[in-house]
Length: 133
Image (tube, rainbow, N blue to C red; front, side, top):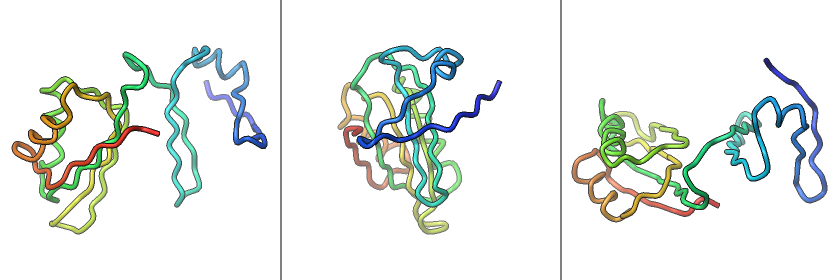
């Protein structure tokens, strides 16, 4: 069932999700939501997410070779390391040369080890991590 509401942003940038929307989606106090904004299309997507614990999210940026199967190799590594993904997006920077994969995932125990594995076994050329703001 789709629920369409027009909501307003207050002077502090906050929005209120209507009660019927929260009930329909099973949202309660401290439910976690992921907000994705696209400045090109002027769209905002808000999606409920369920995480094992709070504050353990990290944003990854992987520059990789633009070859068939490169992203699959990287995703296989995430599966082997049992790291869950919350969001990901891949963009070709230069056809047949480089692509960028941006992802939000639960933090691994050893991010430096993960970086090494991605560059050694995957097609990653450069891996950077940053805390999710």
